Image (cartoon, rainbow, N blue to C red; front, side):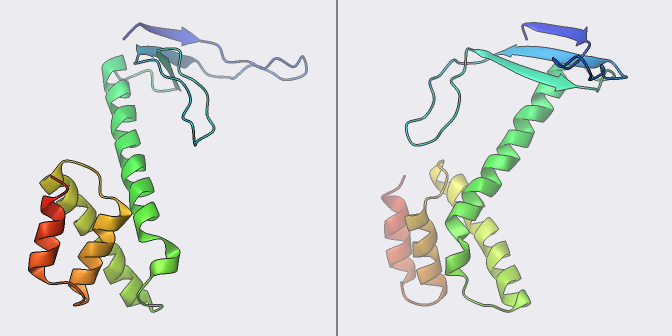
Length: 147
């Protein structure tokens, strides 16, 4: 934690007014990095800035909440990339729901077993096993190569 302060959030424009409630600016030291090659995005100067109206919580707790929120966001991003709407096995509500639950379970089990987030190849291999196109031995051999 580098700083925690109460600030007034305003607008640069003359005709806009300031917020009618206090805001909190929390600055956290993070690892600086350049923008990714294949993704557009700003570089990081080594400071994460969080603005919140939660004045009742310690800054460390707000930082932890933000970190956990990002873990959840990254899980669903990974899950959506793996699942892909083009690869649904059913167009019925129950079939899509079952595939979604199975996908979540598979993602978590692969993460627990290999220590890395599952990629499309891992996910497809599990589905090949589940629909009978691959044997258990083939699935286990595939996952062993990822450890």
